[in-house]
Length: 596
Image (cartoon, rainbow, N blue to C red):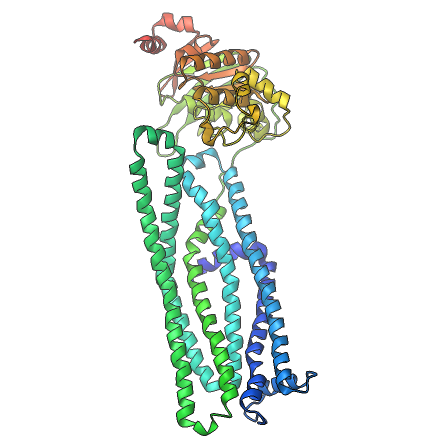
């Protein structure tokens, strides 16, 4: 592991360092009892295998264990030895249960907190961040990557606990059979270097590959379900399934390789351990056959210890390789949580109402890696008037709406509200006074009531019903099976396009906003739905400042003022009659839409 790896791990466990310190201490004491538990078999084996023998073979720890067992209130030495073993085992099991509980608490808490930290951090990023990142990748980070890092935080204390346990059992071997213990150290060192090599050269890169493959699967699945209507319409299911299957195949191959490499050290250790034990027995039988009976208790302790030692080494190797394999996810989250946060400007002036006008003052804007869209745009929106913005696709109409909402930041120039720069106004107060109906409608898998309130609290049923009436939505809502409590399906698929549009309008007017922005409010509607939406727009527009973005000129004909936008600049403005008489770009757009 390199320094950056330790830095990532410390970043993950630092908020819970006291919890991990408790796990460390519990693991240490449990490991001591693990070693004593192995050694506690000695008094029992001595009574069973060498009855009447004084046990001169053992000194130090093992002699202490023999005398400690004899102090228990049993006349039968076998019962004393068994009782002592039970007491030590009970203490060990109790500590290990506490250790397991603490590790599970740490792992679950890390997962919970990471998911919430990521969600909060993503919610604080500016809108431009989401234009540059795949939605599926962000979902993978919050769900799968955070869960795997939670497992990583579980494997770290497991690795430490198994290391302590191996050291405790190794100490018992040094006390009883120092020569054998030295050979076991060599076995342990060989196993360590094997797992270190495999984890560094194989597990880490397999883990990184799995991160990429799994996040790609998440992205493709998210896109498939989001666009299922269009995918079905074009009959392109096979193409999406082929892309998903290819990423799934890559993940499967990496998964299999990872499982094989993780199991390899365990196979090596099991074979080496069996050969080692048989070699010790063969050595005593051939070269010290006269001491075979007297050394049986020690051999029994050695056999029990080896049965505990080998799985411990195996678990250490597997934990290490799993930790390294999950470092790709940990590094991914570390980068997401520590990357510089772009500042979202917010002033301290509270916006309450528009007194005179909104003004775009010498506004410049460009998307990353694209030519400038606005170069010195100058435009006014008068209070209480409906201003329509028309123009061909790519002229900057929707971008203007995002700039007014504060979702995007101009590269130069200002957005003035009654002469005050938008950057000086407190963002929350500004957005609370704007109603927005976007071109790409979002209707959640929830009830109609919840879709209108849209996470905003404090609105009564009467207020929601009133908003639905204003949006011409109350009639169709009342005809639904559960009325306002009807669940509309994923992305509102149980509703027609016009119904979704009117739900979005009801949502926009619920808090009685000062300013309303409609982005292509009737673009994809049939004639009857368009009529209902236009009636709603006319009703809403009274005494409000309305910005109406549209392709269909039938939607904007009654606007107080129409602005024609082309290539990011204003080329015409006036009312419908004036622009038609002028026979300019607006006239061309109008006549082209009237052609059969």
